[in-house]
Length: 286
Ligand SMILES: Cc1cc2nc3c(=O)[nH]c(=O)nc-3n(C[C@H](O)[C@H](O)[C@H](O)COP(=O)(O)OP(=O)(O)OC[C@H]3O[C@@H](n4cnc5c(N)ncnc54)[C@H](O)[C@@H]3O)c2cc1C
Image: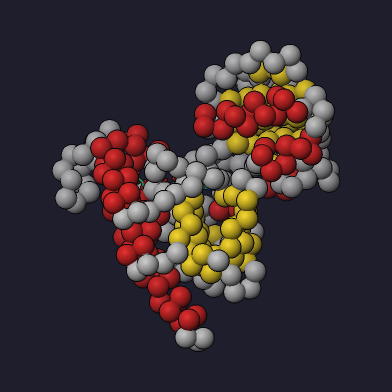
């Protein structure tokens, strides 16, 4: 059992991870080896104290060096589900289960809006994880919608097992698999009653499918953690970064504007201190 599961390797997750590690907490840290795509893509950051006009890639490299120096390790597994087990949390990441006393959501803001009917049909023919659910579609007709090049291996896996695969990617994926067809237009809508049975492209073309895999770098937190209280598109938190789940905290862009590194780092730090207090109270049996 970990003390803390941190989801997100951006500035908010890193800031919390540094403080928690300094306090010798046992951490499992999910995200990306790149730490934060957003920071990496920033041309020049002019308003972060201590590093004047730093390039995003350089700042990310500094972040990584600091994490390594403290011995922080991350896993690039993508978290698809978090369940409150009443006193601790079960985190599902790429089909592996991790248990933790507390959770910090530092997932950034999910740029992509969900497709029509996506939330309703999730788990009913719609999946976010090919590794976890691919076997259910052996020999079947499936669509995959992928906006993260790092998940190309999941498309290849689906090509191997599905009878027919319709593929849309935002990064110009090509294939020679005879059972696969690359779509030129993105999927706009998912359809079906109790189960997803077709997709609709942006030009209105309908395709019958047995299932759909949606592979995005970020998943809306309310989908990952059903019951999480939101404030519009953001996770609702108080000044201690507490969410409506006891022992679950959120920090960074996912809690609201301004979307800024300094705010993310600050909130990550506040969350880490709140988590330390919470864990200490747990140890005392309070
Ligand atoms: C082009 C651009 C320029 C910018 N310029 C500036 C600037 O000059 N100054 C400034 O202060 N800010 C700037 N920003 C904003 C800044 O980058 C963000 O505010 C900051 O990165 C937010 O940090 P975060 O930790 O909240 O989230 P992010 O940096 O978005 O990190 C989120 C992390 O969560 C991970 N994650 C998400 N979902 C999951 C999941 N389900 N499982 C596992 N991991 C997951 C992601 O992989 C990522 O590692 C800029 C942003 C962009 C895009």
